[in-house]
Image (cartoon, rainbow, N blue to C red; front, side, top):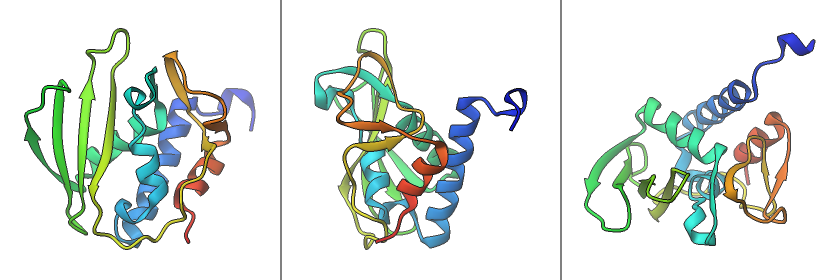
Length: 161
């Protein structure tokens, strides 16, 4: 593809993630894919670092747009905003958090609380194949992730058991 016709990395990432969401909904819901849960639960605070993950941010944005979860705002001292998300398909419950309180970075995550779906997808692997990757000031070790194409990232997220 000529360079001038190549989509921007952000558009390419979102196009690939849109296809991933379509695969999940065709098979039931995202909750049955452990690699999805791996990606959306990435949180820099768990690693004492200062970053966000483009795949995490993109998947959560698309989940909101597709309206796959019921949300319930909860009060918490440790986040700027926190909600329980309940899957409309399987009833799984996840904890969503967002904060921009950390200097120079805002980040969000979606961590499993109770997963009701039977696992359909393959188990998570490390290093995690990412197309968009991480951004911020203090990034995770390169042993944690691997730069891949958008197609390889989508294949990782949708691979079945």
